[in-house]
Image (cartoon, rainbow, N blue to C red):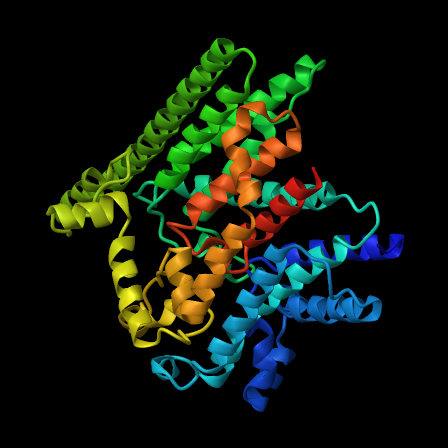
Length: 476
């Protein structure tokens, strides 16, 4: 074990840096290697946002160089958990498959620079793995410190982007539910990148809810009251954003909270009050939104009548009445047979993506198509039309597409290797340690998300949290 405070601080700094790269785009630094005259023109007009995006995009490469240097210097090659080796091998396989994908159908839709950009997320993942590898070799290193860093950034993400989305939702110009807000609206960008969708943001809200719900202030009435208020607000946001997975998950969280309580009836009543208030707040803000729309509508009517534009008034009225819905609705232009209802009502359109993904996998079962390939091969027509890109939204199918059958097998072996941590959820009622409770529940939520999102197969919040959780469970 290494006894070095400097390395501990360096690991924390690198981990903070990795969190700052969430949502970064490799194109923010790859343009430096593109057309020379174009690069000079961009650099001459660069602003603060673009400088920050450049730093964020290049930091994963810096982190992997620093961490690899530390590993080589201290010869930290052995005695890691099996899951770390497997997770690292999954990234290496995807690097290989990404390289060999350059002459496939993807070549029609990506330039050489775009192809290089697909390694960005793999580099970020490997850099994160190296950070945890080094941390595990530091004497008396506390992994809960890394969890607190993660919770801090998740809190910032939830507070800021929830405010943005709620503001847009209450804007009378947006005639839709929060779930159906146009992702390409002007306010839907942060540092020139798209802000998280409500599905991803809801996932982050669930993580905060787990932490706060099980956090106990034994002697402080004020802090317990504050904690309960924040939990109610977080649950309210879940209902407003209407992500099906998150709505189901919040009831799963509440179930385990009641299960772990010594006073189950009292806790059941408490959770019942939470849900009642959250749903009341949801309907209240929804009705308030449409009240604002109605007032704006009346103002427009007066203006249109003043101009004698009666047809415009009728069109506005039809549009408002059509969109005036509180609960997200089934697309009107879809067929309503059983297959289509299953795909769009229960799976939000994922079913067809999964079928298409398996079809493409069968064409290249050994190598697959490399990192981020699902965004191209499953979205050819959308790319041509510059429409919103849909990922395959299933971590297991993504592993087949990105790394072929060997990547899929390794992904399964990863969960086999951590089965002793996974089964802790079945003994949740008997867990006494706070970190074991939140670690087990966060792990369960991420595992469930694997079936409806790419989740930890791609670098992002889930990838960082799964490592947070595994080392936290191992330490405790």
